[in-house]
Amino acid sequence: MPESLPLLSPDTLRSWKGMSYTKVVVEVASLFIPPQLIPRDDLEVLVGEALSGFCVPEVVRIARLKGGLSILELFHGDTLAFKDLAMTCTVRFLNYFLQKREPQGTSGDTGGSAIQSAKGLPGLDVVVVYPRGRITPVQEKHMISCLKDNVHVFAADGSSDNIDQPLRRLFADQELVKSHGLMSLNSVNWSRVMIQLAHFIYAYLELSGVKQDDVGAALPELEVVVPTGGAGNIAVLRGKASPQQPVTNQAVL
Ligand SMILES: *Cc1c(COP(=O)(O)O)cnc(C)c1O
Ligand SMILES: *[C@@H]1O[C@H](CO)[C@@H](O)[C@H](O)[C@H]1NC(C)=O
Image 1 (cartoon, rainbow, N blue to C red):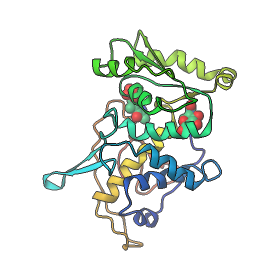
Image 2 (tube, protein in one colour):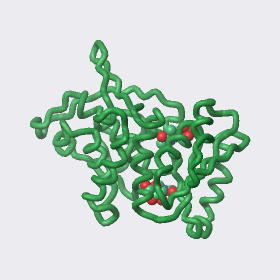
Image 3 (cartoon, rainbow, N blue to C red):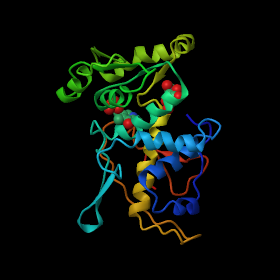
């Protein structure tokens, strides 16, 4: 988790108008990742590589419907889950930081996306624990049919919340975490939320009618509807962020 939340000024936001999705991801990530941690050039390479495997060149695509309604298509990654967007980046960051670690995945779409993103990367072992009988057959087959040596998939009884508990105990043991280089790739990983902020900002830039040269003007509003289960993917900014209240679970810019 970041210790403080960066503020994005309206003029900076405006200056991003017209950027590609990949460029927006780099800008958003660099609000949180200081260059001492990942230098800007490296960040561009990592994000560029992470987002290069999507099946449309623009990575995410906007479908314009009637009546000013648009759909932001987040499903052009390998596993069709929107999670591919953040997972591919997070796994690249992981690989960048460390040689040896064992991240944990989670239920449903997350495990598959984690496996897909990590299976080609050396020095990374992925351990996925999924709730038996509580994910779809496609999700299950996707995970258990991956025969890479660095992918280890386990079924467990109980809900994903039940499964979280022993995992949480593992992660509470700092000694164990250090000695095994354990990392978590599931929704507790801030890096995923951070990258997922970029969807909203990109959609805002493309669809709100914000103009680059309206310097000093009020920002137009955009209404965003997010189909979601756990709502873990909608940590977002507010138009008038205040240091006390910059992140909410409301998808509003
Ligand atoms: C998808 C997602 C969840 C829900 O995770 P599942 O493993 O699919 O249940 C929670 N938080 C975030 C940030 C997510 O992206
Ligand atoms: C989240 O992922 C990053 C890599 O992007 C990693 O450095 C970090 O340790 C992970 N966080 C947790 C809690 O495992």
